[in-house]
Length: 152
Image (cartoon, rainbow, N blue to C red; front, side, top):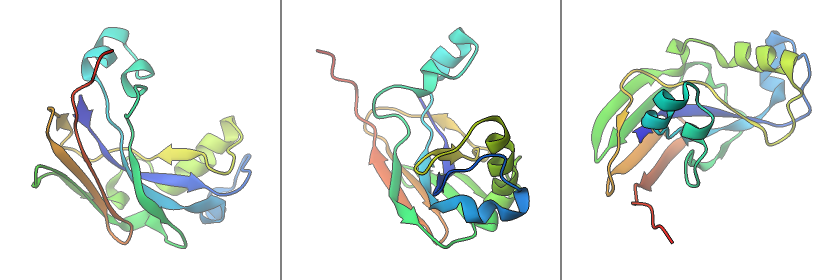
């Protein structure tokens, strides 16, 4: 499993073919996300669906920050206190404005839908016992511990 610290956009209204210049009006807010990925399954399957869809993957939080323009915020991911990712949301491949407009042209977005905006360089593996923290400026710190699966 790999960590991927990301900014999550939380949609706040019905959005269809939304104009890029009004993208902030589509949001209820933003939060931190850890888009956990099982790389072995991603490589085996050749796509992402199963590799990102297990129970407990993609923790979010610590709360939804409303009224914030997330276009240029510091984002940092730490594993066991060591900085593994450090960048700004303005350095992502696709801007939040582009993502809202682009995705809403293909599908209707509804209140509560999430758009994860991509991860900075520095993605890496996790082991049982690791503590992961995703921190985004003016949003907060999402912290969680990796626990080995309990098979029944």
